[in-house]
Image (cartoon, rainbow, N blue to C red):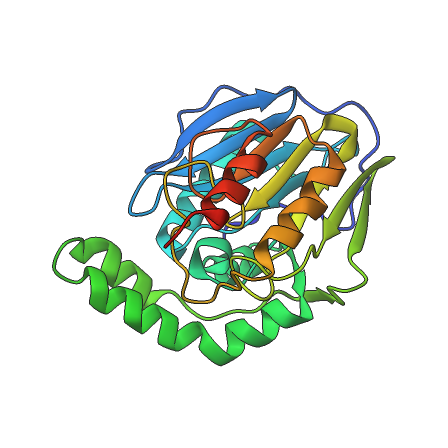
Length: 261
């Protein structure tokens, strides 16, 4: 078992400097702010994760990779770059691009957090979702299809009431997990690091030409949820799938929602 956490150990003392390490297999890594990295898995959806080194030496990972194979590659890279650290993971919604690797993360000792709604949806729809995606990509991307089919269904272990939200404290720096309302999915939450001006908006924020997968979307209430994010006034906004990181993506998402379909 690959263990990357220090659960139960002291977090006092200066954190060791991150060691140079090649990007994890299949990922692109971008420094977006001091101590904050966006990791992008280019295939098949260009899905973004956010990894932040916190003041107490913990690592905060927003979203899990889609497959167990990519999650193992990510954990190996985290271990090589940062050494043994406490790893806290937040699932922003129930789709596999936010929660697929949960089983591997839990086995590694990570604290995996999600809303009660997200956990319930993973349990209810996780297997059928994997089977559907595997069938869709069986011909065009057979390796990925096989990896999705083999990825176990695992809900987050630490749950919270989405209507109340969740505050996490990492050595004096507060991280807010906020449910702004339904948008890309009924359960989507965002993660806001106010001290750094970083908002992980996930799949409800769009920086590209389309709204993407609308299978679980609430088009009518999505604009209201985006306005909740605008009130936070973030400087950096990490979307679920595109390369942009500017806050103007929030206006762009509203424009896409207002456009005829």
